[in-house]
Length: 373
Image 1 (cartoon, rainbow, N blue to C red):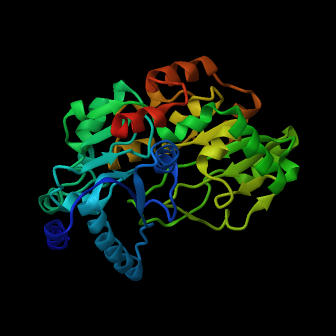
Image 2: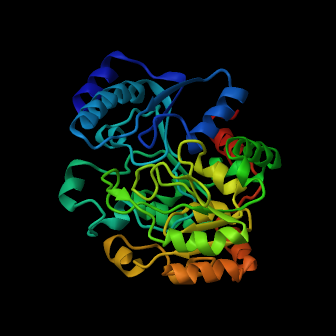
C-alpha cells in the first residue's frame, strides 16, 4: 500500500475540486456520506464526486477483493482534495497524506457510548499494541465532526488526535428526523409494502453487533417471540427488526414477514425505520441517540452489560446514561410495554445533552465548513 501510494504521488497531482467518499460499511452510498454527497452535488457543482464504496467480506475471496479495492483507494487518496470516510478505513492509516489533501471523518455513530479505537487498547475487542506498531489506526484525520461538544474528549481519545480538530456540528443523517415530509413519504412506502401495518403500533428492534467487526455469527433475537406475539399482537403491536450492517440474520429472522414479526432489512434503512416507529428497543447500539431526537419511548434489553464492559467498555456508566428502562428478560419487556413505563422528559434531557444543534441543518454546516466560500 505504501509503495503504491508513494508511486502515485510521484506521477499524479491533487485535483483541487475532487471529493472522494469512501466506506466499507455497505455496497452503496448511505448514511452520513450520502447526505454530504447530496449537499455538495446540489449546491457546489464545481466539485466532482468520486466513490470508493466496498463492503468488506471476511471470506478469502472477500479479502482478496478488498485488497483490489484498496488499490483503487490509493489512487483516490493521492488525487483528492477531500477524502471523506464514516468508519475505520484501513488505507488511510497506511500512508502519509499529501499536505493539500484533507481526510474527513464523519463517524457513523451519534453521541458516544461504546469505546472504540485507542480507547479499547488492552481490551479483547481492541487492537493489540503489536498491531499498532504496524498500523496507526485512526491517524491522518484533518477534521472530525460529532453531535455535541460533550463527546469531543472521547473522540479525541479514541482517535488519538487533538480535540481542536473535532467539531460539534451535528450528524448529517439525523437531518431527516426533522422532516415531516420525509416521514410521510416513508410511511406511505411502508404501507404500500405492508398495508396490514397501517393501524399497528410499530416497535423497532435494532441491536448492536457482538463479536469483532465483520466476523459475526448468525444472530437470533434473544427475546421469546412467541410470548411477545401472544401478549402484544392483540394490543395492536408489531415487532420490526433491523440488524447492524455487520450482522447475519439467524433462523428466527430469515424470511419472517407477517403477523407479528417483520424483518425489513432490505426494504428500509435504519433512519427510515427510526422515523416511523412508535417505540425503540435496543441494547448497546447508538441508534438510541438518533431516536431521542423524536422524544419517543426507548427500552433497553440486555442481560450481558457486565460482560460487555469487560470485553469493550463504555465511555459512560451504562445504567446511569440510558434514557429508558432496562429489561433483562421477556416478561419484564412485555410488562414495560403494556404499562407504558416511560419517562419522556428524561429522553428530552438526554437529547439536549448530546445534540448541540437540533435544526436539521447538520449537513449544511459541515459542507459549508469544508468547501464553503
